[in-house]
Image 1 (cartoon, rainbow, N blue to C red):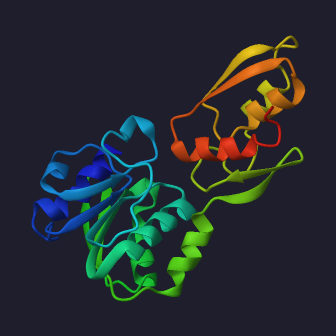
Image 2: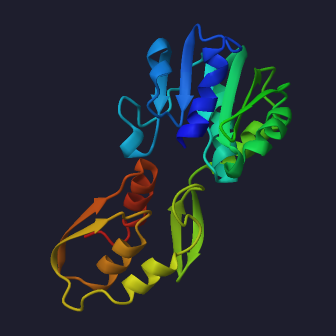
Image 3: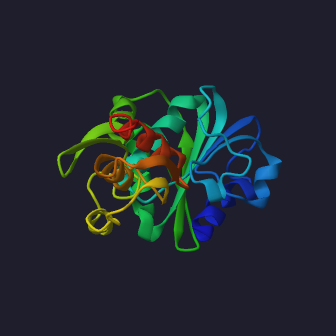
Length: 235
């Protein structure tokens, strides 16, 4: 991730992309150049979220930086959110490692009506260009990456979102663990790395003597989904 982050900031450090005005940084992570920006930071992953907001401000920006995730629907969702918040004529700058979809960025920019300029460094690609309108693809990408109800199997319809761990199915390890929970499970219980809540759901469903359940999760989006998913078994 550090390599693609360095590549993201290269166009700013070289002066190819102006850094004046308000800046939105999606997928924010620590980097020395951030202190030079008047930036609103957003990062849902707690270990990287120092100084970042839990929600993306609904404001307008002169520049939007996007450190893209690997999952396609999630990446396009982030780009759509960034473009929506850009001023007309504002600059969108995005980067990803080559093995995490970097080669797809230019095509996505063209779909957004942006003429792309590219930079290759550190086995990563940075792409930038100016906003010119808001194409229909933006709304499609927003819907494609938003929280939705999904049949994850096992008779469960869960609130989940592209990019979360095992977002559209029950992962085999959780399935195995759910089938082998201690038969006397009771009292205060904690689910470390709860994800969207599958294991906690099975625990509450099958062990009525659980009095307290603590959910521990590094991704604030997964935690929000888990709380929704446990409403029907919460007591």
